[in-house]
Length: 318
Picture 1 (spheres, helix red, strand yellow):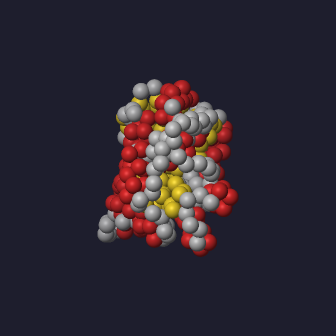
Picture 2 (spheres, one colour; picture 1 turned 90 degrees about the vertical axis):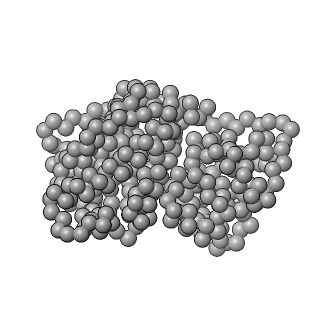
Picture 3 (cartoon, one colour; picture 1 turned 180 degrees about the vertical axis):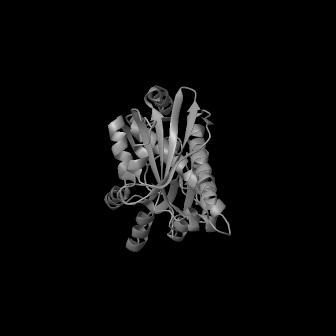
């Protein structure tokens, strides 16, 4: 979906040959094979991310102009890619006018074809969910980075359709590397869409959170709950708004509920009244660089929401 959106945003009838790559390794192979002069590069990719691609291009002294196109819009992300040699930075979702302006800004010629080539990419809804989540994740990280003056490490979101038993297993695996977690949930609803956001803090230092939130004093239980709520409101609120903006809908959010602090995930799953149904699960891991703050945001959509979500994704991909 990301590649299709970008291709459609290129200057109309631009007389160029286009190669597509699913990750950094494929991108570098394409440069070596085709002698590509311009690369539009994402940052969050599997196997080899954009930062590694930029470092490799610089180390190999490849004559390729790189324009970064990413949902990770943190100020530090922009500064890092420029230092690594990127020509410019464009945020997702891509505006066609901005790409053409950037090309003109750097004197890159835009010769037009006389014949129009239609770019066809099959619809894959999981890819669509992943790309929408990727952009929303970047917006939430940007807000957190600006508020706390940090750099948030963002991997690729995971998307899957899970039965109740599979969801329990997935939740267990999210935190299988730590003895205890702290977690809260927040329901949300929109037109034809309903779900729950589950935020799980793994190996997280409340002292680090307090320091970043400029809190001085003892972090007792009441303060820890307040800190959890503050960080959660930023991540969940910004991420849901990022998804809603892309799908052209509005979400109403319920009050966040603390599920447990310093508990084992298995104990949390066995709590009376917790009934997980078949769901579309989007997992977004967040980690703050050089701080002991590590959490996973899971967006769980009800099975009844899938049809509406697919309709919205189809509209984006048309």
